[in-house]
Structures are given as C-alpha cells and as structure tokens.
Amino acid sequence: MKSPRSTYIPALKYHALTRYYDWVASLTTREKIFKTALVNQAAPLAGKHLLDVGCGTGTLTQMFAEREPSLTITGLDADSGALELAKTKFASMDQRVSLWQGFAQDMPFETATFDVAVSSLFFHHLTRLQKLDVLKQIHRVLKPGGSLLVADWGKPSSSIQRMLFLLVQCLDGFETTRDNVKGVLPFLIEEAGFVVVGSKDCVATPLGTIQFIQAKAHLT
Ligand SMILES: C[S@@+](CC[C@H](N)C(=O)[O-])C[C@H]1O[C@@H](n2cnc3c(N)ncnc32)[C@H](O)[C@@H]1O
Image 1 (cartoon, rainbow, N blue to C red):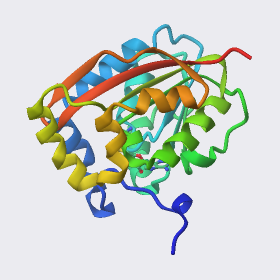
Image 2 (image 1 turned 60 degrees about the vertical axis):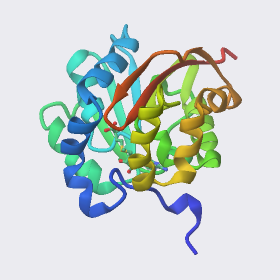
Image 3 (image 1 turned 90 degrees about the horizontal axis):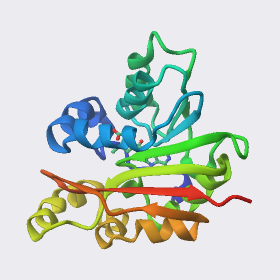
C-alpha cells in the first residue's frame, strides 16, 4: 500500500484530465473573480517573496507575477504534469518565478523564507491530517508575522450551493472535502499556529461556495 505521503489527488482527479484543468476552472469556478480578489488581499506585494502552495498549472501564480514585477515567487506542486503546463506561462519571467515539484507536507524550503503564502483550490485535496501537516509546514516557512491567504471551497452559502458542491465531492472525494463543507478550515489554520484575521468573504460559483481566509503567522 502506498503511504499517504506519497499520493495526491491531481487537479481533476485523473492525470489524463490535467491538460483540461485551466479550461474547466475558468468555466466553472468564476476563476478570474475569485483569484483577482485573492491577489488584491495580498497587497502590498512590492519586494516580497511569495509561496503559492499547490500552484498546479500556475494560473494564480501568473496573476501574482503580472501584478507586481518586484515580487519573487515560488510555486510548489506535487504534480510534474501540472508544473509542465505552468512553466509555459513563465517563459519570459523565469528569473523571479521558480516552480518546485514536491509534497506540501514536506516542503523543501528553509524555515522563515517567505513573506506571504497563498493557496487556491488546494486544501480540499487533502485529508484533515494532511491539511494540518501542510499548515504547519506553511507556518514554518513563513517569516514570523507573515501572511497566509487561502481561497478554497467553504461552507455552502445556500442549499443550492450545497447541492452543486456534490459534483466536486464526487470528483475529488468526500473525505478530503468534508472539512471544507463544514467550514472547519479556519479552525485548522488556528490549530497550526496562525491567527485568523478574516474568513467571512465568499464567492458563489456554479460548483459551490469559495471562501477566503486570511491569517498571520504568530510573531515569535
Ligand atoms: C485543483 S488544483 C488547484 C491548482 C491551482 N492552485 C489553482 O487554483 O488553479 C489542486 C492542486 O493541488 C496539487 N496537490 C494535491 N495534493 C498535493 C500535495 N500534497 N502537495 C502538493 N501539491 C498537491 C495537485 O497536484 C493540483 O495541482
């Protein structure tokens, strides 16, 4: 049996579908709206070092790179296929955007490296234990007082939104998405040592409700 640390759920569950991920995400998640909101939440960005956890095909990473030319960006994802697609978006920016293949539970980065960590549509690919492991890793690699900004599926804002989210659950699995539906993610973020400073805003989409969570790493 494979260890939980050596497996992950690809962007659209099956590797063969990863090439269609950008198209599906843009059609079904109001992607431009919620990712622009996430980029806005991270301001000011000038001169900072940002980590995109579970960056996948790099759409959010690219939006950050385009927003602030002085930003240094590191993207991390377990899936080499998704990272190959991401690379094509940074042909002219590879000086300040580096993409790493690896598990977010075992980040290959020094402690206190990043000013900001961001993540979109990633945590619902993880079991509760994996979520906590990853959050502790993010806390480790963030500088004290650094920010964590998350956009992921959250508590549905209506019963229709709850029904729509069943489609995501059928694709990505019920175990990994259950905590998102219950709205537990902000509590896990606090358990990992962060202070949650915002978690009310959300966006209704054709697949469910995307919730934003802003948190700060404790000053030590
Ligand atoms: C739905 S995609 C989201 C990609 C991107 N953040 C976006 O918003 O378009 C989720 C990504 O998480 C990655 N992933 C899943 N489990 C992972 C893990 N344990 N460590 C690193 N990446 C992981 C998958 O390979 C996939 O690319």
